Amino acid sequence: MIPNQIKIIEVVLESENKPPPPFKIGMENDWLVEWRRVTEKDTKLPILRGDVSKETFPFLMRTRNGWYIDPDPLHYKARKMITPAVILIISTLLIRFITPAIDRIRFIAPILDMLNYSIKIGQLDYPVFLFFAFPIFISPMFFRMTANMKDIKRQNILIKNPINPPEISIQKEDNKVIISKLKTPKELQMKRTRIQVGIAVPERRMILESQGKKEGEQTIPGMSTALPGRRITTGEELGTGVGESTPMTVAHRRVMMLEPMRVLDAGEWVNIEEGKNTENEIVLNGPEKLWPGSIYSGLIAVHWELIMEFVNNEGTKMKWVRPLIMENYHHRIEIEKLPVKSGRLELSDY
View 1 (cartoon, rainbow, N blue to C red):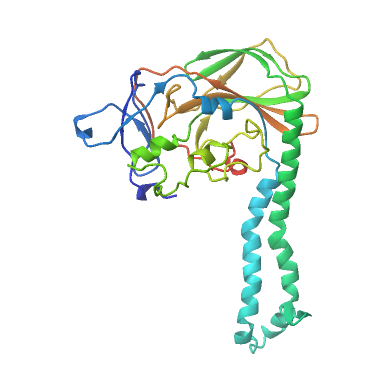
View 2: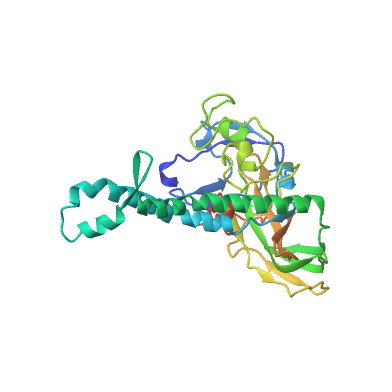
């Protein structure tokens, strides 16, 4: 949570493929991702071997390609309720605890008598105020349960009734994508579209090797042990999410909710007119800060994608995602701030 208290990981990556142009995103006293050439000072750094490619890695094609549903808005509301609910229940118990010490104060005693009026159930007395506070305390759990049930139903509907992808023709330029042809599915209403770029979670093997660790040993802080179950999301597979990145998903060969990228920057949304299937050009600009092109390796993967937002007849928000291969620039790129996002889908605001 506090980057300047964490040691920066530096390694030398050996590959038979040509490396990308150097870039630096972030600052050394903050979150940082940097790719540079080897110097004479790097002789003591650990050496890792891995592929460097411009082609999208398979795990990203499985998790960031195709149709996804947005989580139910109740997830976000339940999340916002947790803090006030906890404060309320602790305050109720605190008042009960300190009553014997302050009940002789004249102007406080009537208020305490009202708040601590008790109801006897069996052999125990319970303050009436607790009967109001406890339902509020557990209400976020019921909201989350309701939202998960609705999400599972919508995911199953999407699995049973697959939707054809939009018919689209695109032209890629420097930090820009031009859509020259667009035809969307009739059962969906398109709302808006944009292009975005982010950095994927590094491979688990590469993280462990960079710290001199082996699978089965004590992992580094912030990582869980390897999960024995089948792959659900990137964070769960790599041990950096531990089931916290997306709401409940159904058992299917692909995830039906778009896992948030921990590092993400995007161009402006472009609104699309209702029912628009157009032959006119739609220009999508990239982020304000110039980012590197597509780079894929086990440690650093700069991933570009086109994202379109739709609404179906039931009012469910959906997204269609298509990876993009963007060309690299020939000059060094520097961005002062690494745009870190929430690891939870309902809070990531992507």
